[in-house]
Image (cartoon, rainbow, N blue to C red):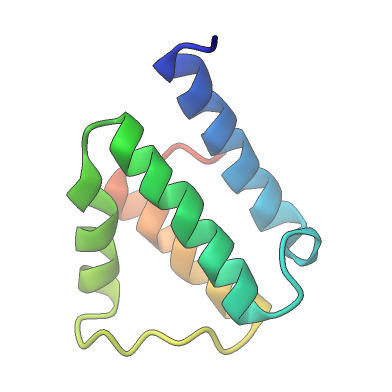
Length: 90
């Protein structure tokens, strides 16, 4: 079984791969957003920082009106979340 650290490294690598080729993980901005949310949620669980991601999302989209418009803006949004939450996604 993989350790939490190995799993965290893998999750960070997958997030980076999603940023490189998002269309492999979802056909629409909403689908890509959902996949990224799921990986970020698991990251928060493993690091015992479950609110780091939701706090970053709230800071970037305080009115909870974030809606993915296109793939590029979706990736930029989640990269900003990474920076605020302290996720090393490459």
